[in-house]
Length: 636
Image (tube, rainbow, N blue to C red; front, side, top):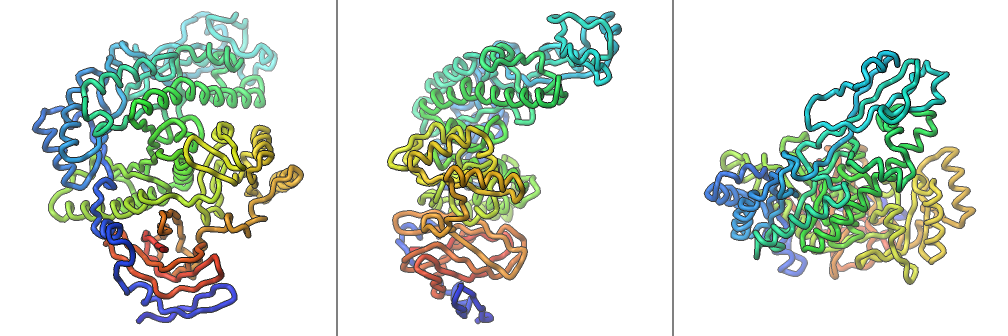
């Protein structure tokens, strides 16, 4: 028997032997559900693996052997990446789909055009690049032809733009000069920017140019239906799209005309602003950047995202895109794409983006988050799995390096990991998120780690309908409370939207993060508008924290996911630190019959016979957490 622990639960102190909590093992729930958890037999909950298309290009025998190997390792799906843009690719995809059907696996592939991108038969997506030099205008007049950084023939010229050097005070009023369009200045020192469009590598269809994506998508869908026949939509059911990283600037041939017509912005004259140089003034340059970002979002939605939704989704396939390849808030991806691809991250900001995307996907039921794991990454595979799942991933996808196991020991380790993932995913897929409110924020303040909630941005709220004091989205999701953070209420659009929702009976709260003069000013403004601060009404039953934890070990850090079905509440709990220690977990749980701890690493279930009832709504349970450990607390 272990040492006796003292548990403080408000007005009481209760002594509990922690060993009693962990050592009584026997089934406590419906046999079929428990059996599938213990045995990890739900193969549909297995992770997937992405494999380069070239690995299957050596004939039927290689395809059969490769897929048998993948199935034997415990995977349930395959993503063919880097599929060449040629109609011949369908022969290989068809053969792979047939073998996937034999092994009861799902199949997806990267989007490709039936026309060659290399020879220019299909328009290529390009990114904006530039060179810069400083010249005396007399030297430029003598040599009127700009010299580009790259002499590759596929790089196309966009524009040459002159910007007055800082010493040109008398010429600054002239503003920028576009070579070949404006009259050249007569003298002075000028910065010469030479802008060009460089094809994205690997080559991608230009989905932003007029109707290019529509025609390519229709061609792809027609070929898929004809070639795959009975495997279409059953075995073959998702398509990955690639785009530019958000750190790069996309360029399509009619972009300057679009910005002039739709946004009233002379994009060519202001291209140096995108290269990081202020034009005219810092204030003018800031306006240009804002209008460019707004315009790119609009082009992306109108020409690509909405077409994905109307063509790919309605054709019975799921569309997937990576989180850092979209120009707007991660919450919004689920509005258009069935699958958001996120990477296993240790970086806090990247993990917050993953959580925001997952919260947005939950608003649109049936939308998924797939977490991709680089087998050669810094995190261990199990740690990467835990991070992705606790951040909201519905599926796990490994890179193909995980298939390079050697010997029985490696194979056994992979199978144990597959069982571990299956047990967790089985519970999560057979339950529903317990979300108490919607959060509209670009960050997730630490105080909210005690709550279950879903995420939205302003665009999603603008599209939502309000009926009977609840927000309705294009799903069965209903929400009575929206919490706005300071960063969203600082804009006029955010303020107007908050007031509009409040007038329709939706509970609107604001969350103050900054303890400064700006935070004080916003607090006063919100109170004047009749909008209550989030922390002021935490005594409402529907806005009480889901889980509060406390530990004497300062390094222990708990994160959780709260889900439920008709009979049970499931709390998936993870110790985010590499420290072990005792923690007291206080759950927002009313009446329940029994509580148990489910261990995904071995499938064992331990009933908890000792706990402390704090009040009618809360129960406290002390338990030991090991470094990086993840487990379920299950209330029936």
